[in-house]
Amino acid sequence: MKIGITCYPTYGGSGVVATELGKELANIGHEVHFISYALPHRLKAFVENIYFHEVEISSYPLFEHQLYGLSLTSKMLEVIEFENLDILHVHYAIPHATSAYLAKQIVKKNGGNLKFITTLHGTDITLAGLEPSFLPLVKFSIEESDGVTAVSRFLKEKTLTNYHIEKEIEVIPNFIDTDIYKPIGCPDFLRHIAPNGEKLLVHTSNFRPVKRVPDAIRILSEVRKQIPAKLLLIGDGPDRSECERLSRELGLQKEVIFLGKQDSIVEILSGCDIFLMPSQSESFGLSALEAMACGLPVVSSSVGGLPELIIHNETGYIAEIGDIQRMAKYTLNLLNKPKIYDSFSKNGIKRAEKIFHKDLIVPNYVSYYEKVLNQD
Image (cartoon, rainbow, N blue to C red; front, side, top):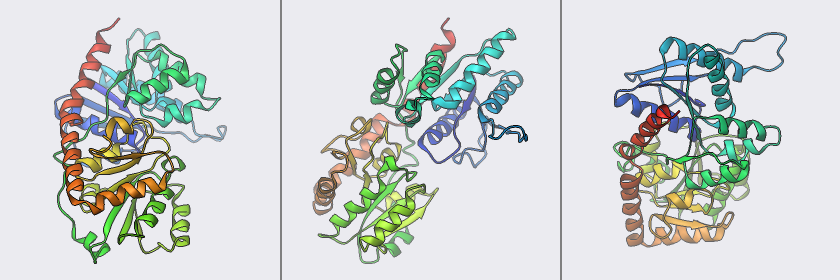
């Protein structure tokens, strides 16, 4: 099967999932064509059966703003024609699904037949898509997709409710390669960060307000009242300056370590003790799954798809949004009780392997492609 995949090439979850899906599809013999404005960051090494097509955005004096959506449509049409794609799979509703719909209509007018699938990841539905100016367009693009998938039951229900549509949505959760994401021991550089055996809390995100990264710093402040601990923050984004300011305000500038964007996530996670995810909204929580696979219990907020991923009192703990005291209490309970910690750690690894392993999830996408291609 020849599959076109369009995604944002950034560090966000949707781009990561799309790229990993493409790699797995290529590994089992499918031909995958990525169509995006830059090479996805998880696609830096050569992979057989994978091809990249860059969306070229023209600069013209008449246009005050770049026309990414239209440029994307043009590139889609080019790849569809010259690579004879069987299906197009777009990740994130706007503008990708809209561009795919336009490409489909042009192909149809020229006597061809193109089907496209849209995968919803979260903020395209719960934040950006609910903007009054975007809502009708998102609703239309979802309804006109030949197939729609969502990464959690929560996101499926949110989509149906928010947009008042009756479209069938297939839930296919995010997945992980447990041959890569697994405990590998503490790397030497982390021993320099915690030379006196301090416990290491970790959080990774795009540092947007919805992730509530300052809450992770406040949790550390509470934990340190009882045991020595430090917090590693992986990623970057608009809230980083606020987090740096808060760290100084709480006297934690030496205990909060900003690592920026990192590719060696497994090494860092394997050397840490607890993963914190105090988000305000989380449709799935891919970074929490990565942490679980590496043996870290997760302490998170009870939002979105997180309760579908994290089993409370088994693989981690779930608290209400903004309940710093309870999250800190849960963190201390794990750090102070080795038997409970070891049980949670093993349960998390087992859940990642038995429920979210790539070999279990990726075939669901292939089956869904075939279902969409075979429908009238």
